[in-house]
Image 1 (tube, rainbow, N blue to C red):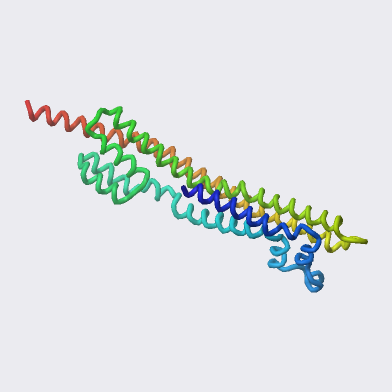
Image 2: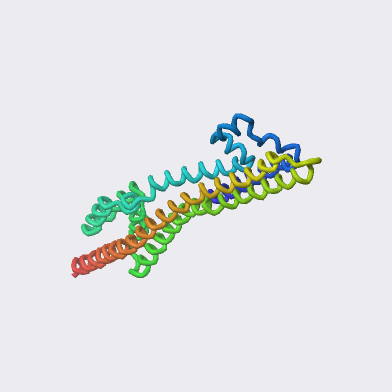
Length: 259
């Protein structure tokens, strides 16, 4: 659902950008991107450079905010001690070894994590055969890890979309530059031609400036998720063994009591 909303917002932003940029394709809309004399002498400020990129910079600004927000969010949530808390694991293992399944269930319900999801799935099927318990824990673990990868994919989407939006601005800037040649009567003013080319270069550079750090951080968090997934598989196997051993112990206790 969230992925669909992000996709719809991106498409809507690009559509609005195209509609708002259309009047600037003609020669009459070029002048607003031309720096004044003071800028030409002292160099353009950062704000003037951003403005020279045109309406496409609005979409790129939104993408940069999205990338920064996702990176901060991932640093807060995609951590080994957050997904596989060691202290929580020790408490859970201790309860399972003591066959205190009710206490273990309450503990897991109050501390959601990958470990808690697997343990809850195993405890819910504890009365069934080992293969049923194993399938339940594996299925829940796969779904939890899939959700984790899906969250991480949003940053990869931003890294992929940003250069394309920058390329769109490049194309629009080149169209603007060629329109100067086509619609200007007499000699073409170099400053008008340079405005369109500047727009093209600024949007391309901005798209890359957003995409490169986004891809770097995506690679970093991908490594974290892969490491967590690998450790989670080993932990799940140990938890499965504890749950099934507890079941066998309960069964032997019951049989000896009947005898």
